[in-house]
Image (cartoon, rainbow, N blue to C red; front, side, top):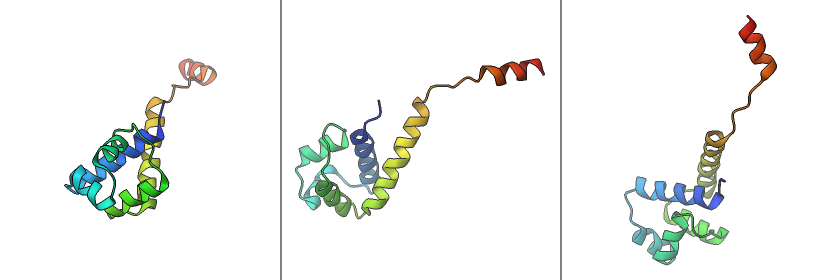
Length: 97
């Protein structure tokens, strides 16, 4: 099952690491406890819209861009976990040809 909080946490962690910043730096700038930010990045806690806005501001990353990255991450996870759909009629025609 794909969980939005996990995808969001992954994106926030990737963006923070890409900037070479520590959890401590971002939590201080965003005025969020270090432990809580860590739980968000690990997908253990849901981020409120206010908290997400503070983290995005601390990362100097527009929320719209963050959400676009999360959407792309969810889409990739969906494709990776999608069942294979077989088309028996089409497959039979291909084998007969």
